[in-house]
Image (cartoon, rainbow, N blue to C red; front, side, top):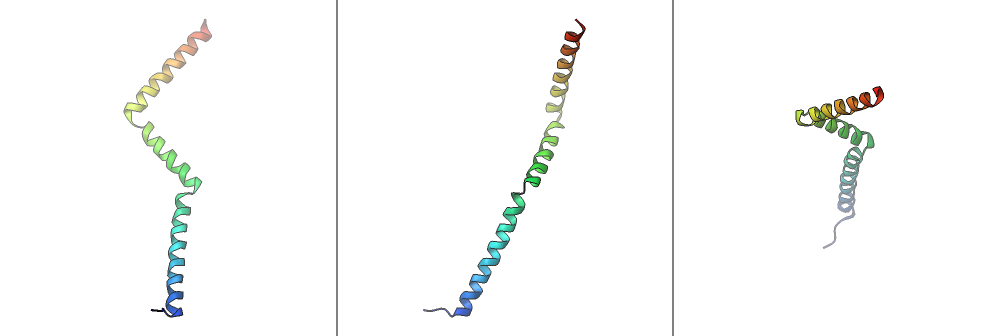
Length: 73
């Protein structure tokens, strides 16, 4: 059963529009700036958790004290 050319053209146009929309969404998700912003937000959220934040502060204070001790000797 043959399809008429107008129906085929409409189907092709619908497929093109769907492909264009998909490519636009992929382009938005693959944007390097968006990756960087997402990573920055994720890291900031992780560092603000008390179980990560306080050990980092303690490690920084320990390193600072050791450096100060080394300089004053």
